[in-house]
Structures are given as C-alpha cells and as structure tokens.
Image (cartoon, rainbow, N blue to C red; front, side):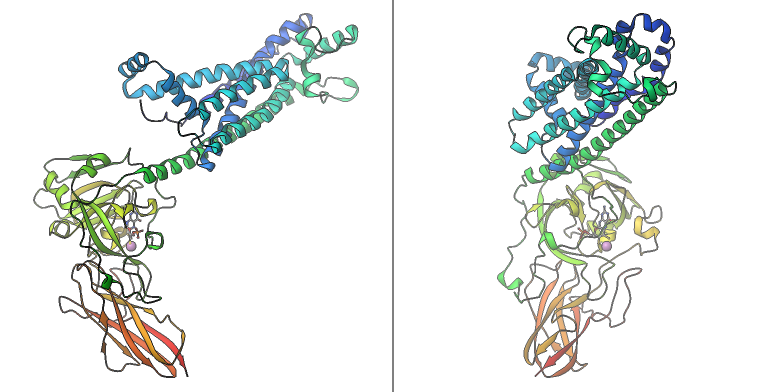
Length: 595
Ligand SMILES: Nc1nc2c(c(=O)[nH]1)N[C@H]1C(S)=C(S)[C@@H](COP(=O)(O)O)O[C@H]1N2
Ligand SMILES: [Mo]
C-alpha cells in the first residue's frame, strides 16, 4: 500500500445520517403527555438522535474545513489522509497483506470506509455527549482533533504548516458543535414536555442545574434561555419551528462542509500534481540535441531570446481550468487503425529512448507580428516509434489526439512518420513540462501549427482518416492541414518608438519550421531590400534571429521585413488574417527618429 487513500466522498457520507432526522422527530413527538410522566429517561433517549446528528454534522464541518485549509495551504496536513496513512503504517504487515489479498485494488476504499465508520461512531458519541454537557462534547472533539494532529505531526514529511488544517477544522468544529447542540436541543423531540418537567424539578429542588441528575443540565444551561412565547407559555408552533431550524442549520452545514471538502480536494489535487511534477526526475536524453552555440543568440536588447523561457512561453488552449494530470494516473492509449493497441503508463513512456530537440511552436491564430510563438528545447519520446510499435494499417492518414479534458486535434500521419522530431514531449527547457503546457505529456511536431499537432495533456491517440473524423478546431471551420507558413517579425524597434538618429539595430526572428530560414531582408520606407545578418541555428525546426544595422535619419520611418526559407520561397506580402490556416504579410513597424 503506497498511495494515499482516496479523499473523495468523506464529507458526503458523514453527512448522510442527517436525512433521517424528519422521520425520527416526527415519530418521537407523538405523545407529550405520556412523556411528561417519565421526563428524564425520555428526554435522554430523545436527545440521542439529535445528538448523533449534531456530532456527525460537527465532524462533517470540521473535516470540510480541514480539507479546504489543506487545499489552500497546499499542505499535506489533511487529517483524514494523515490518519489513513498512519493506519496503513500502523497496521501489521500480515493484516495489510490479508487486506490486499481479499480486497485487491479496493483496499484503499475499504480502509477509508473503516476510517469513516470509526469517525462517524466517534462523532456520534461526542454529539450525544454534547447534548447533555457541552464540555463533554468539547472533550470528545478535542480528542478527535488530537488524533488527527498526532497523525499529521508524526508524518515523515511533516512541516509546521501541516497543523493548520486540523486546528482550523477543530476551531470551526467547536463553533459548529455549539450551534448544532443548541439548535438540536430546541428542536429535540419530546423537548416540550421535558422542559416542563425540568422546570418543575428545578423549581422544586432549587439545586444547581447539573449537581445531581445529568438531565437537569439540559437546554437552559447550555443553550441559554429558550426563546419561547410570552409568559413562559410554550407556543404550539415552536417545536416545529425549532425542528425546521435544526434541519436548515444542518442542511446549510452539510452543504458548506461538502463544498469545502470538494474545493479542498480540487486545491489539494492541484498541489499534489505540482508536487509530483517537482519530484519528477527526468533522465538525460539518449539522443541529445546539438549544444546551443553562443552565436544562436544575438543578445540584442528587446530581441526575443533564442530560447523562450518556459515562464514567458505563450499559452493557448480551450481549458477553463488547467487539467491536473498526475504522472501516476496518466495513460496513453494508441488505437484505431493499428495492428496492436498500446496502453502506456508514464513509467513505460520514460523507459523508451528520449530525444531532445529545439523546436519553435507557433499558433495558427498568431497575427503578423504577433506574440503566439515561442522556441523551446523539448525532450520526449519519438511519436513515430510509438506508432511503429502499434503498426499503422494502410489507409490511415490522421492521428486524432485527445487531451484529458476532451480537446481533440488531427495530425497527418505522413508528417509524423517522415523522420522529423515529432515528439511525445515530457520536458521543456530542462524541466518537466509546466502544467499549463501539458504536464505530464504533450505532442510537439515541428512544422505544424499547434492546433493540428501540439495536444497538451494528451491521453489518447486514434489512428484514423481525415475523412472519418475532425479535430476540435476543424469543426469550427479551420483548415484540416496546418503547415506553418514562412514568416518573420520585427522585435526592435517596437512600433511607434521614438529613436535618436544614427545607428539603430533593427532585429527580430524569422521562422519556417522544418524548412529552415535561408535569408531575411529588411527595408526602410519601401527602399531597396537589405540583407539582414542571421544568427546561427541548431537545425531547421527553430526560428532564426536576424539583425540589420540601420542608419536612422530624423523623421517618420516605416520598417519592413520578409524571410526566404530554404526551399527558396519568399514570404508573400499579401495580408491575410489567421482564419482559416494562418496569417501572412510583411510585418511593418513605424518609428519616429529625432535629431
Ligand atoms: N489539450 C489541448 N492542447 C492544445 C490546445 C488546447 O486547446 N487543448 N491548443 C493547441 C494550440 S491551438 C496551440 S497553438 C498549442 C499551444 O501550446 P502552448 O500553450 O504550450 O504554447 O497547444 C495546442 N494544444
Ligand atoms: Mo493555436
């Protein structure tokens, strides 16, 4: 047993018993007269159900708050998880072996169920205690919190912030217990008669409330004077109203506890995935990329660095919430028109040869001169080798990839199989993929726009045909095939910049992935095209920096750039927007030069 118990559903199950309140109260309040005759035992018995409910609600609220705080602080301090882990650690080996044999992969659920039942019994106990004597209830709650705290602080990875969830849960739980006990007492069945009996007993005996009988403590002492009608008359409507108040308070508490628990789990999962990412050790590449040369980067202020830092790499996706996929649960299925279906775990994936490559990724939505492009050093497994293992059947021309959040993208089989570095990438710029960039695995295919090649959080690759199926953006009318167009961009000077006359470095990037940039030419004010000086590049899959030294004279000027790729094609001046297959045109920047 190595993994954490599943945290889901804890609050919901705790809260369930609250549903029984209406029937029991209805049945129990049948005969006030008969009850009056045996007030104390009746009331004691009557207090049991509300007590149980109050206890369970308190536990639900406390655990909900604890989960929420654990999620927010990103700590490993969830008391439920800690108790679960402690239980695993403390259970003798033969017992765990037995459990694994008997329950198989359900062992964690069984353990969690046992913990929940134990917790519910305990909570019911202190709830009942609280109905009689609030202090007793508090003691129970404190013991409850202490067990959680003990489990938390004895974890090997304990840090002081880990106590926060349990303490917060206990605090809010204590408050909740007072509220529930108070409301439960007012709404308790048989309370009307019991209260009358109490009053009589108190008046007659004139004793301190809890000096003798535990019954005598009851409503007044803990909850303060009951809010009854004028003159001490018990209004007929009151018990119903109190019961309603109890139900409403309970419902609000259960809802709040469940919402806190769910939110806490979402946040905890988020921190669990970022922890998993931080702890991931990534092997050295089996096929390293050529070392970057100093001459790959012209190091001009304002010019895009050759390698885009991951933190400033553009991000484009349809995800409202960034998918949180842990490497432990990640699976890739390769299926469809294949000879053999593949099911690959992350461990399987990283056992395959790892290829490193510098590849510039670009979005089809990038306007001329736009920012949706970046260059990174990727590390991953050859997509072609995976597909060869699966065996592509004749006639298939499309890889339809799907992400964990249901986004789809169609990539031409021929492009992936033609020998280029089409990767199932697991790392970017020397670290595991950032979560926003597809952790734990994404596709990268040099030469294709991201919408037809770069599926992040990819979990499924179906070998199919373009005729049979369409990816997400294709259904919206974007082109099914998305080769990246030869383009270039002026980074410096920036548009509308005011410059001093004299030598000005006009610099930028040009790209034609998998064809390579052969030349870049620049002109001012529609004059003759001048050859820009090019940086070196490690290959044909990246953008290429360029610079042209311009002798700027006073006045307003227009600068333009155009690139020629290694096929001999020079980018078209025709201005076209991104839809449906990528923008074209010469990037034009206007500047003002002063004397
Ligand atoms: N799961 C998923 N993958 C996706 C997308 C998406 O919306 N969802 N968008 C694609 C598009 S349009 C682009 S341009 C690239 C952008 O990758 P990045 O965010 O890492 O820069 O991711 C591609 N992969
Ligand atoms: Mo894109």
